[in-house]
Structures are given as structure tokens and as C-alpha cells.
Image (cartoon, rainbow, N blue to C red; front, side, top):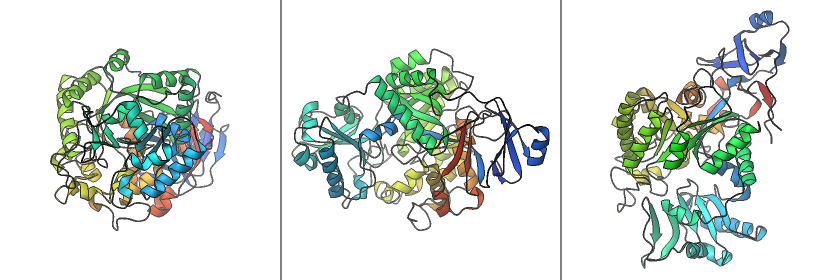
Length: 533
């Protein structure tokens, strides 16, 4: 069913602490009408000003602006229900055991899944095609690594794609091969596409359902808006179908795939000034790969594999040219850069692009994981958004030092350095790479420890953030990064009534208790919506 229009009557939300730019404020209330915040102030004042308002009594807890997921892949999140989820498995035998069981219960078609992470396994070696062949046989298998930048495929999939000893690495990717030159079954970055392009395409109705499922999963976590990073023409058409039907559960800011023809077609129209449930926001560019699969581009070779410094997934010259086009058109370039070389080059490209025309939105660097001290300061000087995912730090802390070595490890996840340099922080999860739970993200930002308290004292603890800073990065920071500082991410008069209530007094919780917080009630455009789906 379409979302109902915002009710005309005034509602008064009372009883909870309001989360403001200064933190939690007791004794305050919010009045909403026609999908917007009408007023914020002391309960008695608003009750007197609006005596006929419908009172919504909240039993304590905290009322926040609706959270904004600053970096996710919605179709991928929605597709998980049809795939085998290998997230969190601690060994290759445990992974193949789950795959065997899935294969038995889902006997037809491709074996598709994601979430495996060899860095969690003893020995940390990549798996191989032969590990799958015994129970897959002629059935092709395609299993994405947790970061989406590598795929584990079986011999049947390699044969179907025509990948053999003489197959060259594609530009921006690698086909891992053994000592005899035979493909091992691991494909990195653009090499993933050699097999991915053979997967059955979802129908239009399946794609609509995947997007809606992903959006509802985010809404369940307390999000009222999402930046969907990497939307192709079919996904964009699906979003437009859902928007036309009034069935988008939350607001979507769509960043197009770096497809030059798609870019030129979509960026011809001026960017929408009026806030709606769907807006084309910019273009997502890839410079490098991921650190876990050694595809992130580093300034010097990997400490644990000196033969490589990572990959340029896309020619930097092409990224720079198209980022400049995006800015001049009034849209937002969002550049994936994980390694210190990729971040350095991204900043250089954006500095040149900004001289050609700034448009109305700040450019973004997505992930910004490994950044030199000089470059961390450059984010603020250029006005580049640092779009980061705190849980990446706590997921990757155990093996990041091995990749970088002792001389560079201090470059990892420099959130405090970004803020000290005047940069804007915007938080996300990179779902489905990580769980989208924002409260786990807030705890990770505050402690730089995982859910088990590791590492003791936090990973590079001088880069920790305060709770106020972390909540801002999920609310007002993301809104400002999207050019919507007056509309979203704030409890102020005139902002849309996207609101989240949690039972907990958010200001005083320990990080351990913060991880356990769950959304209690949610309003989107002034309409209360169910959290379960």
C-alpha cells in the first residue's frame, strides 16, 4: 500500500528527551503538522499554543531526527534473502558446510551468496575453486567476499566464463592463479564482472521487490533516508516505479553507477531542489579496491604482500573528468577511495574539478580508510565530505596492521583527524557489507572496539569520537552532506517530520548498552510507520 499523506491535524510528541545539537534536552516537545516540524519548545508552551493538538505520550527515552544511512547498497541488501549468507563464519570448513546444506535445500540454478571473509579463518588464505567443486559439480557457483570486491567461484563458473590459464587480467582487476598459472577461483575487483555478468538477471518485479525489501530492512533499523551508492539504469527505473506508486518506505538519494552514457542522460536535468522520496543525487566512482582483498591502492607495497600495491579499478584520469562533469551539472561526485594512494589521488582530482565549477553540493570520498596525515587535513581545506563506515574499523582491526605495517598503521580510519581539520563526517554502514545497525556503528565510533571489547583500549584510540559527534554524523552530518541541512537530520522548525524514538536515555548509556538499543517508534514524513516487516 502507498504511504498515506501526512495527516493535517497537529500532533504533539511529549515525554522523551529531545536529541539536539547540544545533546539530549529534557522537558521539550515537538509539534508536527502536514509532514513537517511545526515547533520545538517546552511542553507547557507548545501545549498552550496548540490546545487541540493530538498528544503522543512517549514513555521517557530519546526522540531523535530520523537517522540517515550515508552509504548502502539497497538492492544487494534486499537480495540477501535469496542468497546464502556466509557472514561471520570462522573457518573454511564451516563455510563449505553451510554451502553444502544450502546447495541441498536449493538444488536449482546458480549457487549465489556473499559474506565470506578469509581474514577470519585460521591461516587467512583465500579459498579455491576445488573447495567448491566436490559438492557443486557442474552447477556454477558465485560467492562474493564480504566487501564485494572479490568473488570465489568454482570450476564450472570459470569454464562458463571462459577463464583459463591464458586469460589476462582485465584492467582494474586480477585473476588469482597458482604456481602453474591455473586460475584458483578467486577474482578481484573488475575481474569479478567476468562471471557476474553471466548471472541470471532479476525481472523488473523481482528488482522492485529487492529494493523495497532493502529499504524496509533499513527502516527497521531506524533509518528514514538512505544514500544508495551505485544505482544502474534498471535499479533507477525500479525506484521510479516505486516512487510513482507511492511505495518507497523511506527517502532515497540515488548515486548513479559510473556509466558515462547514464551520467550524461540523467545529469542533463537540473537537480531537484524540492525534497521528495526519490532524488538522483550524484555519481558513484571507484578508484581502488578493498584492503581485505589487497585491492586498495597504497602509496607503497603491502607489508604482507610486497609484490603488489593494490589496484586502480578505474583510470584516475577518467574519474577526474567525469567528477568535474558531475560537479558542473550541480550533482555530487562520490569517489570510493580506501588506500592512501587512492585518497591522495581522489583529493587531487577533486581539487582540479572544483576549480572548474563547484555546483551546489560538496564532493564526497567514500570510505576514506587509509589516509596520510597531510591528506586528512586536506579534506577540510577542500570542503570534501569524509563518508565513513565506523564498523569497518572494528571489523578489520585485527588484520589491518599486517596489511599496512608499523610505519603506516596510524593512517587507518582517521576520524578525529578529519574533524580536527574541519571536514564534515557522514556515517553509514556499507550494507550489506556490514550489518546496517546504527547503534553498533555509534558504539564503534565511540570505542573503536568490536562487540567483544577488542582490541583492549580501542584501535588507535586517539581517533575516537564523542557520542554527540557520532550521532551528528548519522543525522545532521549526513543531511549537510546531501545538501539538505534545513530539511533533514534535525529537530528544528521547518524540517521534515522524520523522527525516531528509542526507549533508552541515549545520552547516558554505556557503549555496551548502546549496542543493544533498538528503535521503538518511527515517523516518516509525519506518518508513524511500522518497524517490523
